[in-house]
Image 1 (tube, rainbow, N blue to C red):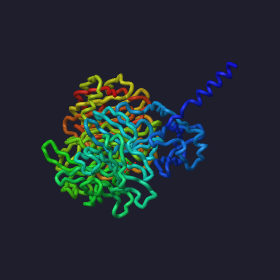
Image 2: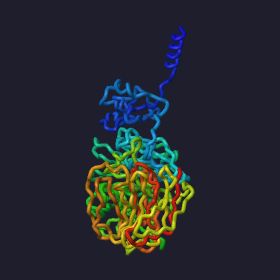
Image 3: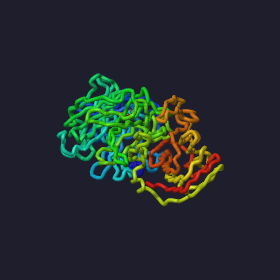
Image 4: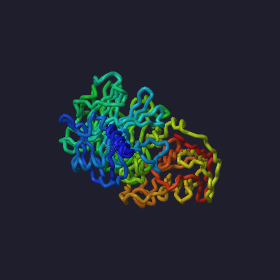
Length: 596
Ligand code: FRU
């Protein structure tokens, strides 16, 4: 009798329990995608491709909150699987599934909470808050279902996740773009509205890629897609037409939009952000050839001497010297209509000499400061790096500067000064002289693998000299100067887990020093060394940011920047210095733990 009572009470309690609104979907990354739609009143509210598994062999579970669409279970439809079969493995819950800890998740770099992230996009600053949106697939750790994920920060180094800002819709995927703050209400959405531009991508339309806008009246938290979308289609039907960059051009009181159109950038202008007029095109034949242009950015920078120039960022994929994707830039003049590059067409300038620096774009509305955020991965292997519950991070935001050398203008990139807010207590290991032998400089207590190293180098020998970050199981990253060849090199061939990625194509192209370049010790797309041209000039400074699975190096205030991923089996905890004979003279080595 007692048992029966207990059973009946349990049944009663269970029947009282309300289902939550969050679909918990078991996903297996290697499964084909099936399509889920949310439909109401004959309208398609949402489309998502999910890698559902019904076999109990999921890699992880992902959430989809029906409450966001004001929808219920009955509004969800599947194609590619019987709904009853799907609901056998999908549950409805009040809470999103927990994301397991990922060994390689960085401590102080921005990452998505789970799922896949590529380009940073739509970056803007308003009322003391930096908004970082990003290309986001919430349903797998590989590319697909493009949404704009969203994070905010008051200092560019502490990031807080926000709800997804722009959902993929019936019209298409939400590709990259930019945001502006419309202080004077030129568009009519309201003074101070945040107006974001993105490419809507849909292979079933006449124009596969069109430019659309969405506006936000709550400072970028939620958006309304403009009913007059698309605001721009290509006049010649070109297929690759995307990643709109919009900015205010003060001298003519107008907005300008730059769109990457296959192998050129197209400039448009507008008075109201909604109607756009074609002005000019630039870029055909410039830089690495022939490469697909993506994710433009365009801004002014001044040298310390006060010379001001326009800088055009052109992300190319492929085209990186070391294979895959990378960020080029061009310096020149702009008259409000046309950009003219100062340098010859074949001159290539890289913003970063590593292999994991792509889709770099800058915040709008930051006054004279130009702050760039790179995606820290490469299209060659971004989807197969050995992380599991999330894929990809952003490099630390970098402040860009302009300097002149040998008659040419170059752009420097250096971590924003706000990073000092994360710094712990430094340990000083210098001065150290290495000549002919390896010197173990220090063991760091930091077991979480998150620290920065600042070096002042008084002398580099004429041969090879450098430093190695090593751990107790034989993994190492070699950072060295080859003064004779005029190179700074980062070699990650033995950095830890490197055996993923195909052996692809590394390009042999002339760099701006007219030297042929090729990656060194090339084993596959990942296991290689990257290098930058480097001329010894007496003393040098070097900053190294290490964060679990990435190394960013900045020499001489960012005149050389190099960003590479690494997947050590254990964090590197030891620093070694070496030279092949000559005197490597380092006056100070400061190691600072970085804590979020
Ligand atoms: C660059 C890019 C963009 C595009 C986005 C799609 O990485 O290819 O051109 O908008 O990714 O996710």
